[in-house]
Image (cartoon, rainbow, N blue to C red; front, side):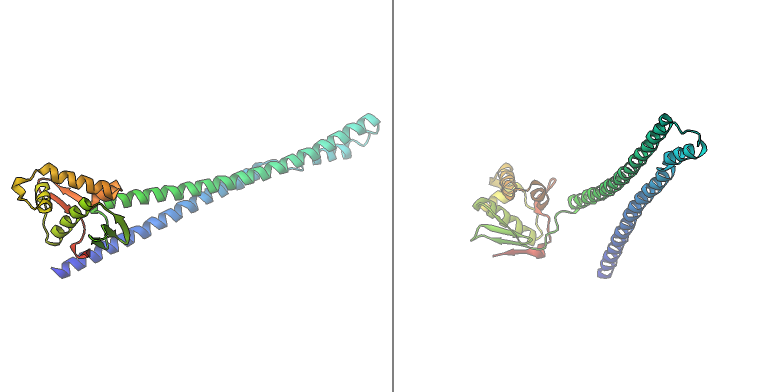
Length: 242
């Protein structure tokens, strides 16, 4: 039996590792594909842009092919055309720079969007895993004298009533027991469970959860098993009472 459990755990760990590695490779491949597509688009765009010196070359041809244009008006016109060609060249060069900056900005935005999307997916999976399996508690230390509980080295100050409720649940968990609301109330009040109301124990559980503060953490830490009662959803070996 122990060998079977160990083998199953190794298989699960190996599967999780392989899945994580595959996910990382997919993310890297996706980001690389985005960069490659944008790089190809940039190259095609710059190739199809008109030559910045095309206008100047046409004006130069006018000068060379029309050497009969010697009048002041014709020469002035050619000078204006030459100046316009230079202005067009400068404008097109600035457009090239603006397009280049916009492409870099678009690449950065897409890469950031993919990264954030992967983070959100990974967080959602982690939250779903936590909801299915409960909180991973490495240590739970309850100090009645200090009215505090240390959960994974995080300290929570509790009221006397909350400490008593948590202590009862911890002792029941160490004994592998599930307590109903009436049994919880009976242990704390010192009366028989038959003489206690189920709602009184449920109220103590609610106040304990409210005192812990974090709704998700408290709901997962103190679980309600239908038709059975309440139990701490942690390993009993990590519980310490001081």
